[in-house]
Length: 148
Length: 231
Image (cartoon, rainbow over all chains, first blue to last red; front, top):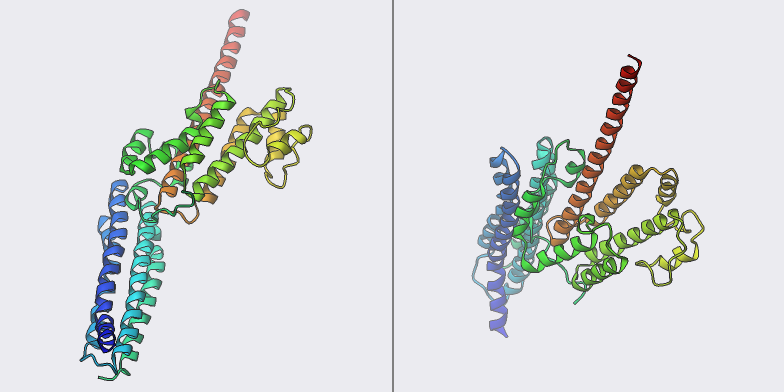
C-alpha cells in the first residue's frame, strides 16, 4: 500500500511538467497550424501570427516551477498532498493550454481578415492565461502546507 | 455509426488559409476561385473528401442539370444521409432538402400543377404541403417566415428577387449551423456549401447585368433606328 502511495506522490510531483509540456505542444501546434494557413492567405504580418502561436508555451514553464516547488522527499505523510496539488494543477494546465491554442487559432483566423482587431482578438487567449496563472499561483500557495 | 464526434482541430491550417465566407458576398471580385479552393481542399482526408463530395452532389445546384428528375435528387440526398455521420451536416442536409421541397412546391403551384402525389418531397413538411396546397404559404409561416415574401415574388414574376431571397435564406441557414464549428470537417463542408451559394449569387448578378445590358442596348438601338427612319 505504501508503495502505491509513494508512487502517487512522485506522480504528483512530475505531472505538472508532463501535462504542461503536452498542453504547450498541443496548444502551440493548433495555433501554429492556423498561422501557417493565415500566411497562405495574407501578404504580411507573419511575425505576429507566429508570435501568437507561441502563447501556450507558458504552460510548461508553470509546470516546471510547480514541480520544483513540490519536489521533496516523498513520504506516506506527504504523498497524498503532493499527488492532489500536482495532479490537479497539471490537469488544469493541460486544458488551459489546449483551449488557449484554440483561442489563438481563432484570433489568427480573425486577425488575418481584419488586422485592426488583432489586439482585441487576443483577449480570450489572455483571459485563459489568467486562469492558468490562478492554478499556478494557488498551487504554489497550497504546497506550502504539505509537510516536507 | 451515427453521431460520430469529429476532431475539432482537424483542419486548422485549411480553414485559416481560406478567406472569410462573409467576404465572399461583399467582394467585388471573387476572393477565391473554385480552382484555388479545390487546391486547398486536397488537404482533406479521403473519408472527409468523400463526405464533402456527397454533400455537394446532393446540395450544390451546379451539380444538377435543368432536367434532373426528382428521383435523382432523392437518391443523392439519401446517399449523402447514409454516409454522413456528423450531426450538424445531417441537420444541414435535412434543412436544405426541406427548403428545396417547399420551393419546388411553390414553383409547381405557380406553374398551375396539381398537388403532388403522397410520398413526394423530402422531410417533415411534405404531407402538410400537399394537404394545404391552396394556402399561399402551405400553412408553414411559423417554420419558414420568408415563405410569404417568396410567394409574393413568384406571383409578381420576379424570378431574380425570388432567387436572391432563396440564396439569402440558405446562406443564413448555413451560418446558423456553422456556429461552434471553426476548424473541423463540418466547418470545411459549410464553407464549401457557402462558396457554392456565393457562386450562384455571382452568376445570378452576372445574368441580371447581362439582361439589363441587352435591354439597354436594344432600347438605344431602337431609338437609333427610329431616328434613321425619320431621316
